[in-house]
Image 1 (cartoon, rainbow, N blue to C red):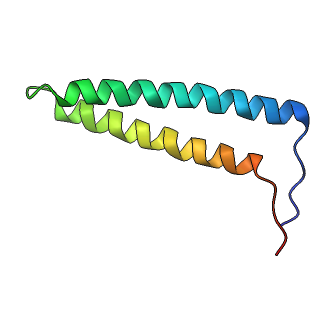
Image 2 (image 1 turned 180 degrees about the horizontal axis):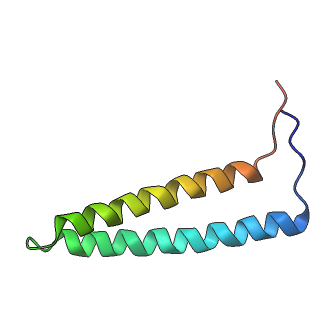
Length: 73
């Protein structure tokens, strides 16, 4: 593909961002779990939280892909 290799600083920044997103993703998972146990919970709010959690998961996947060097076939 011809992508440019990451510098050590760029790699550290990506790894730090991944750690932050993982923490936020885990927090959302906990919140969603607790809210799901409450039958009177606002379903719209729950859907929004689940959508945000999925968005974070996608961001994490993209960032992790940046850390993996391209392998020529």
